[in-house]
Image (cartoon, rainbow, N blue to C red; front, top):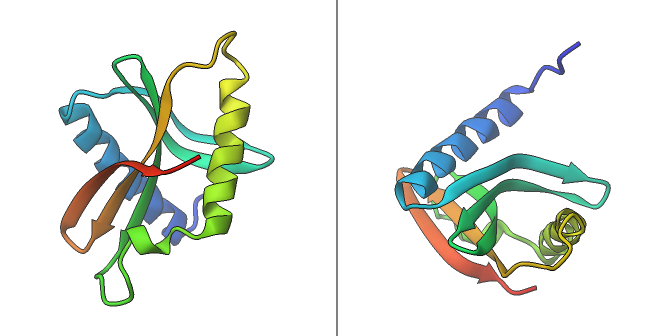
Length: 118
């Protein structure tokens, strides 16, 4: 039986779809959405040339409290890196990869390339 999403989860998926459409228009190829493992989750996995791009999508109604990008905590970064490590186990050789952030503050979308250092 399919799991129902809460309104907040449904809204999050809508923002992820917005980010996905944006990144595709920028020339990135879609690989996977919502990759989940015991250690964490990656919102979008894309490919930019030979590079695997792990994308965290963050949204805030406005930037009064630091904005969407500022909402990524050290704990969240650890979970992203852990999930990426699990994802990369499927490759015989680790491809080039990076962590990007799509930060949506109100109506403004910003693509922050290589925003998280692993």
